[in-house]
Image (cartoon, rainbow, N blue to C red):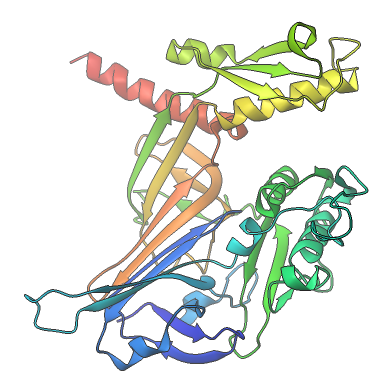
Length: 408
């Protein structure tokens, strides 16, 4: 029995059919990032003719799992365009082979657009210069995200940059999130959205919510704390396996350079001594901040020094030590992915030793075949320095196991 339904849409976002004869469905849903999907079916099957380049899919959980228990609304697991088509054939099979369609989620549009300093002007207009250095905004984070998307790829973007059917209009009563600021110059829209949303505790995605309507919706909503309601543990029978992983830092010292030239250029260094102690290693990275003037004071009261410190913090965060917890949940009537929790939600994982870890679900990997259906989840964030408590807890788990092993 298939657990998922695949609607096919054409280039105009109109539903043109449904695929339920697949031999394998593989979906990865990511929080604040681009997800992927892969669909394999017999090449000779009539449904294989539905999909081709330029088209896309909307993938739905079948039955009641398509309705979110916390909010009571039905939404797709993922939607997105075809990115690759592969035909496999072998003379040993005696058949026409298989077709595999691979694609991304609709969040890919965020990664495919740059944040122009002035989104109202194309680079090849006039004398090739922009009248402003940066696109700057201050205010509620959700409002900034919507304006950023609307003016670079949505309904207010230049005609040649618009993603067909993308609607950034917020539903009535939508929360705006915490205050934030943006200062962008040719960053990808996705990276800007990730920074704004992470800082304000928001979940952002582009999805095709209704196959009968040719419309892509930008959804911006607060991330949900479901840690009390959603508990995954071996004792509850809804966790088949888990694994945690510690990774050494790629950068523990950030050398930041401000304005200046040659011997007159200003340099400063920031370090993460705890990471160096933990791993008995040091690693340097260079951060070029040539657009930041030399600070007058070497403390946080000087805005230029604060800008250098922020740049160093970002570099050390990206290259910092990491901790990751991967899970194999078991869907039960009381705890089902897509019904009781989704990507971005904070859930609680209880280890066999009784330790509770409450962190966001960063990624979910779903596979569905004629014989089996599995869900694998990754808890935490892409960078451990954003979840230092998770890193500390996972490290203590490892130390406990290591100490136990060394006694025998």
